[in-house]
Length: 386
Length: 247
Image (cartoon, rainbow over all chains, first blue to last red; front, side, top):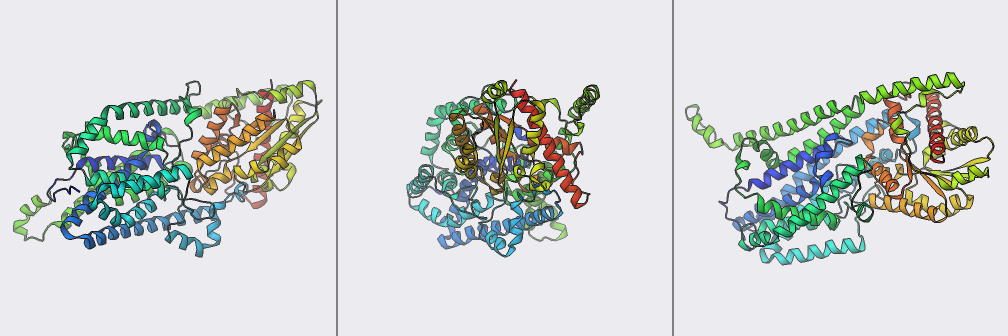
């Protein structure tokens, strides 16, 4: 495979769009949020989750491919697993916060009309099992379901990486076959409590991650760029058609007299198994963005794009923060007031908190990398950090 | 939100006026804004029965909130309240509402007991309350929608009218259970099949916002009384919706 040179400058498009997807995930995770009418899921069959997983695969291939080339398979594997471990710890941390929230709510909850339906709180009756199931990633409460997928993808990623070194088809063909098998035989992965499944079916979603990794590993390849250019007109037609259909559904949902195009035929579009109806328009968008947004697009370096780029660069921290902030935002909206003004305030505050935290982490990491210098030489040190 | 409450205040005032004019004893605390009472769907088979003054069998199938144990007695669950309200509207037609609520069942499990619990009762209308358990159990939206569709198809094939009832609302549960997707799904299935979906969730949210039923700072037995009150309102509103749909 054509490994990118270690000196290749960072592709800011990846950071930028991952940053955007993190903001959109935050917005979509607040139920009944007015702003969610303006996110991807309102206008396309897919949503920010696809963007996040695809770019994660792409970036993983870039970063660890480089490590593999320079320091060998063992080191690259160790690096990938270390990252998976970081994600795992972050996930367990979020889980503990979730448990705190739910057990508090379930205990303080006094409405008898829900006593029988509050099955969610059942795990409070068997915490010894629930905790183990959480550690095994089998217990995935709402909105804590995307990190388990990411963790699993990284755990198998060393194998993907070695396969990519041989030939990309070694990886893409099995992955696509598995994806198709899931579509045909409707295979799902069981979770806890009984009857639940992995919300993001890893057997299906792996294909998106792997597709990202394949493209990432061949990002320097001229033939891929040429192929994308060739596919561009078709991609444009597919994407716009899907866009028109989904927008008509969203309008129909608000204003019933507006017809929802092909609603009867196409709805519902399966997210758990990553329906082709989600996947194909998403790939079309990838082709469009790859062609329309050049690697060195000027806006990526602009001050306006900078906060989003930083968000994308600190994706793990910002992702975890967004999960917390959306839960907090939801709490504020349901407990106090949910008028549009309050919704906008909650959204703005949450997004600002994410952007500022990303900038802070970036600053901290830069300071951390800066060599300790004498007071006299400080100025120069500052420059290095920038 | 502001405008909605204003609208509702006006609505409540109008109802109060109407009440004093006709001497009817409908408590205004069940009132909802007019957009939640709008109904365009029809119940043709039921309408026919009512017009012919023939006996009417209605089956209410659903989960714990249909069974109504929270109110303390079967007579206090919404299906019985519905029967009483309908008897008031159509005094010369014998109307029975059979309660087939079973807690903690998914929509698919309800469809599976259609032959024994629904068809065997020979109903002309089925009030189908679905979605809470599916949301709690995290059943895939596709499977939930497919189960609803299968049930609707079966009833339509047998010339039985259908009315769907969506989820219960409570501020606190929404922190723990994510109802949004399931709510959207049940309304979309209703829309695609031209079946009326009774907006229980929005109505209860409205009552909650108006602080009509406060479960938080009251004694245990008061909470049971409040639950009965909510079921009574749901039953009444359902009866009103049915009366509008058969006109």
